[in-house]
Amino acid sequence: MGAQIKVKQNTYAALFVAIIIAIIEYNIIPLAPLNHPQKITAAILLIAAVLWIFEWVPLFVVSFLILALEIVWLFPSLQAEQLSNSPNIFFGAFFSNIILLFLGGFVLSSLMQKYGLDIRFAQSILKHTHGNATYTLLGIILACAFLSMWISNTATTAMMLTIVFPLIKRIPGEHTFKIALVLSIPFACNIGGMGTPIGTPPNAIALSYLAKKDIEISFLQWMLLTLPFLIVLLIFLWQLLLRLYPVGDLVLSIENRHTGKFGVKQGFALAIFIATAFGWLVGGYFGLKTGTIALLPVIVCFWFGLLDTSDFRKLPWDILYIISGGLALGIALNASGLGTLIVSTLPSDPVTIFILGVAVAGVMSTVMSNTATAGLIIPLVISLDIEQQSLISLVVALALACSMAMALPVTTPPNAIAYSSGAIKSRHMLLSGGIITVVGIIVVLSLGPVYWKLIVG
Image (cartoon, rainbow, N blue to C red; front, side, top):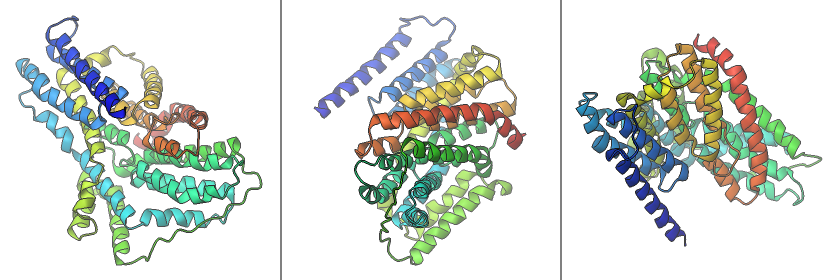
């Protein structure tokens, strides 16, 4: 049955793409204000949006489809209009500074997991709570958030659930606090990803488009821009879960999992992690891009055998290509002039654009991939004719809004993993996740522009 459904979805996707191409090529629906390259770009944008929303095919396949359509269909039209003389502009998105940055982040993630550094850190926090349920919840939230700043929030969720489930099983069946423990993991992972450029793909997309406007945001600057919001949301998450699912007189029993000996390889892995993180924080002062610094863990880990070829093959390449597809789509919008045309129809008031953009990003990310949402919205606003400070505030706010949506199991991979555990119901996620989403957007809208002006002013 599942295979039949998949075949139907693939067929629908293929028919949809063919129909859209036919509509443009045979001018079935006239789009008078647009020239031919803009019509093609609009068609590619529509195809990407629909396929990303309905997920008839894997998201990374959509990225390759975007690239193929841009080279085979869009480029000849751009060339005819003398808007571009080389298809290489589209290839650059698939191996840019941002892609290198994420590759380095994924290698660090694999390194930490292989040598148990992530588990050691998580357990060290839980051990210091001494069974106090209130502070154990806070410890889990902090562990998830910190790890998700540096490694995949999906991997962090899976690992933390494994660590916490023995603890949950010792809680009496009728006690609702176990729901709080399970919900805290995906929500804290989602929030933690906002804190660094490598934490979640929307951050990378935001930085890459700002770079196209000659606005360079360093690793440290991004952390300064986002950490206050991360801290506020983590504290709010902790207090919200305590009130929705009270602790009462519950005392937890912490089970310490065996993590093995901390040997030379573990020390070497930790040194690489610290050196790379430090390089990302200060590299900008020495003229080094974050992607260049990200080559350090890639080269050293595989050169000295800390990771091997099988580890390289297991890296989440699909995420890299999903990001690349979004960047390639933005290049098409810029090259054809469609992005500028769309922007010209938007309200001229920066405040209205800011509020509308953040609200739309939050809603869209609730029902579709936050990576896809960022890849669709940020390219449309990056060409706005507004001052640099306002543009930075808008793009950062959009990236954060994409990561704050967490009301449904399908909203983010961490949500899906937590829901698939069977320990929570969708109504639990909808209630607490919906509240966090709304509060997060309100915090960004009210405090973001003022705070970011102080940082980038």
